[in-house]
Amino acid sequence: MFESAEIGHRVSKARFKEEVPALREALLEAQARLFAESKIPVVVLISGEDGSGKRETISVLYDWMDPRFLSTQAFEAATDEERERPAMWRYWRSLPPRGRVGIFYGSWYSDPIRMRIQGDLSEMELDARSAQINRFEAMLINEGALVLKFWIHLTQKAQRERFKALESDPHTAWRVTPWHWGRLKTYGKLQEVSSHLLRMTNTAVAPWVIVEGEDDRYRSLKVGQVILAALNARLGGKTPPAAALAPIVRVDSDGRNVLSELDLTQALAASKYRTEMGRLQGRLSELARDPRFKNRSLVLAFEGADAAGKGGAIRRITAALDARQFQVVPVAAPTEEERAQPYLWRFWRHLPRHKHMTIFDRTWYGRVLVERVEGFCVPADWQRAYSEINDFEHELVEAGTIVVKFWLQISQEEQLKRFKEREQIAFKRFKITEEDWRNRDKWDAYQLAICEMVERTSTGEVPWTLVESNDKNFARVKILRTLCERLEEALKEPDPAPARKGKQSKLRDASKKKIKRTAKLNKA
Image (cartoon, rainbow, N blue to C red):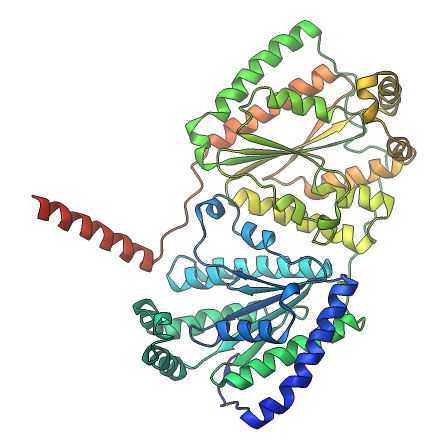
């Protein structure tokens, strides 16, 4: 893929001085319009070989554009906090909001390339990661983002000459280390891995732009021109065509479904409830303090009909836990900040660290429930959300997170009874709103959406637990029992394998051990 970036592209100083003023003016105008409309975010990835001019390119963009509406995120080795969450967590947190440009110096491509070069990732695993990246970028684009991916290329000869030039200048010598010279020896492997990954992720909606990096003026001009052309195209109303989606057609020939088959008459006597609740809360408390939980985290997802008892069930869970160990996230209509991001962003930001839990009172399933039924998103958005949600939950499980999902179901008659009770009890009156009554009028539409949600997102790794909730005692005990069983089952499994260390890490560790041994011998 790099042939076109190895032919010696050059831009003369005179031409550069002639073209830059108009380009800068046009970029500023496009950026001002982007911010004023605040309809799309722009994600710019700057990748490439060491010494190819990535840092200089970002500096030029800051010089040519309004820095108030730019942000730069640089990603190096993951911190302890980042390693305790799914790999994509740190990138989700850094996405720019609508109306702004986010520049990524290093990105979700960096780790797969590094791990493959070091032998920590097989080619099959690299291809699987490529497919995951493609789905992630497609989701960003479907949510309105403009994703621009630049690979700045240098030949091995040009890279060596660049390192020598930097090293010879006292002002830039610090930028070249023995590590960089060592990387030069793996140049061939980098080309093999990066060209394969770029080919696998060079999609129609997020293509790679290969830029020859040897001539600074050419590199800067091309990157600026590509960004301007892409901004003008999107601001002019040209958007990537929506993917063709097969319409969802649901037919229950006999009138039966997963909700109609629930036995809502199940109940639990008060005396048995107290006994079971005490036993299960004690069991949950022990599991939360189990040493095997130290490298795991827990995400609880609560969904259900209005007045089905989600809040009461959550309180019975938290009563058994140390308050320092969990966070309850009530989910309502998105805030202005959240509306400026992809819909999954507000859930990624709350994912727990190891030994911690996040309890979501309503979840990411709002996209295929409320937003679908109320018409807050177009059909294409909620139809693609099923696979996006499955990908999200799969990433959590891969990272060692235990995910447990509950749907609490009650009958229409029981819901009406609880609505009226809430209106009569002062400290419960806040729970009942006009929206609750309005949603009740759409009961059948919600039941259809719930059935499709369960069928499309109840996976082997993260199944739905449907809870018969007409009797609160029965529902709370079933939820606690299910949670304890799922935790016990997960903790029997081996700890999620820690990221294997690459050769460079192993060499550094070996050097540290050698230094320690030498120090001990010297003391002796």
